[in-house]
Image (cartoon, rainbow, N blue to C red; front, side, top):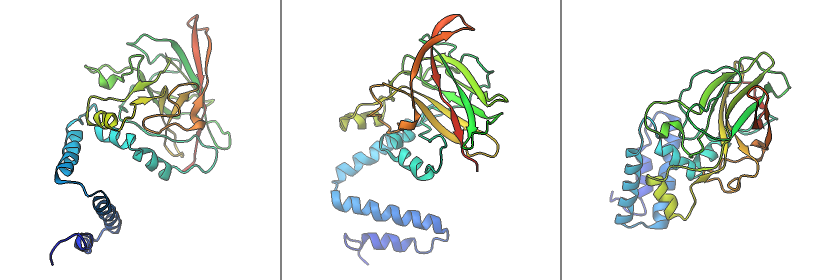
Amino acid sequence: MDFNEKNATDAVLDSFSKIKDKRLKKIMNSIITHLHEVVKEVEPTEDEWMKAITFLTKTGQKCDDRRQEFILLSDVLGVSMLLDAINNRKTKDETETTVLGPFHAPSFTMSYGENIAKNVVGDDCIVSGNVFDVNKNLIAGASIEVWQSGPDGLYDVQKEGDVVDLRATFISLEDGSYLFRTVKPQFYPIPVDGPVGDLLNNLDRHPYRPAHIHFMVKADGYKDLVTHVFIDGDKYLQSDTVFAVKKSLIRKLEKGFDSDENKECYHLEFDIVMEKK
């Protein structure tokens, strides 16, 4: 049978008819159906299709053990947050989830109150809160991974060398509390020196993310939580380039005093509510 515009989709779908994995078959059928519909609607030229292939090739070539350009692409197209919304539908009062982002990396465990900002200079900030469940039961021994960019807008993995900075893992105390010192987070641009940056420029979109700190929280008997805390008043809260802001995750950054260090600092309170498995 000749392969043409009218029978193309059916011909490809028919080639999948013997797939034994039902989930894989459903996924491939959907991908082919919608992809063919896009091609039929847009009618790209062969040159345009080659540009698309080149873009994906460059995206893969930009990935390494310190950078994930495909996650960045998923983020700016809103796919990461759509996936998050589907897989983490809010049912009670648990802390809402948001994107993991492309800069998560393993971190050292640090003690209550330690400073994760070892190699940067910025406005001092204390971040603290409690970990508990939806019934207000405090959770001791929860693992709390945190990571953020520095005042220069860069994460440690974007810099040369193997210095771990502005990231750490803390363990909640018996009363469910946690506290660490850092520098005040601020807005920053996602990496624009690759194909995703070129795409944003061509789409007339800015590359900025509002000020935030990443959290990954785990505790026995509870669902893993990946989230951020955002800073109230940031000018990019309404136009986060990866669509990750949720109102329930926005907190005020208060001016205060660090009595242990005897100096002025900012305070950021962020309680974490876990959902049972």
